Length: 321
Image (cartoon, rainbow, N blue to C red; front, side, top):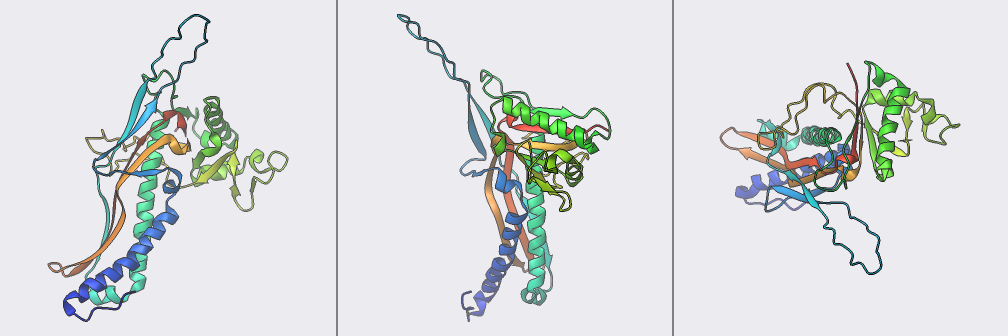
């Protein structure tokens, strides 16, 4: 830490900068630790524009050469996927007692932990919502069938999501469909909430050594893979309640919202390339004093967006009620 300035005019700036370092470091570390999707889906910078574009390439046509006949030229079709970043998300707290905030590091740390946790949860939820929407999309048009449609399996009866065999079979069907579409499913992940994770843990085929060598331990409450795809337990999947999302607006046709029926997600299978994500403002922290309110404000903010890139790389299991 730099030596404090002796000029009283700049003393408050020094104190504020020191507090930003202490608080912001906690927010950043908690975000990196708690966020699942940040580590799974690449997030590209969006600068000089509000929209990130990704080209889609159609299927290449093959032909047999006939001696003496000039080969035909077959044009390769192109499409695009885009994501727009147009909303700033803010976490704000404040402390009216200056001395308390300056001296109480524990308070700053706890605020940083909570900001980091809530932002990480919000970030992950946006990605998982888009993954669920992607599973319901048709194949991109005008690409000659190069990219497939999303996979959505709806369990037929209420309670099927707590039947280990039925849940396993539904997830297995999605993974097999992706494999038939030549997708590298070992790069995918299966996201399930704690309830469905416990259900799958009771499926003997996943942890019994006669079926699976060292795949899990019932007593420890964990298993590694299903059909060779890593299983990730998270409580950030849509849970059956309708969602009105902070990133939704008229410009994106409320893309992040979900109806209650759409939000009944028992499992979600995603490839890292399933989603297109961009950020204009990475997670940023700020601490400043407002002379009008005589209060310190503690902010964390970021601006990001996520959209579907490859529907065929998304698969969801939706439960009935």
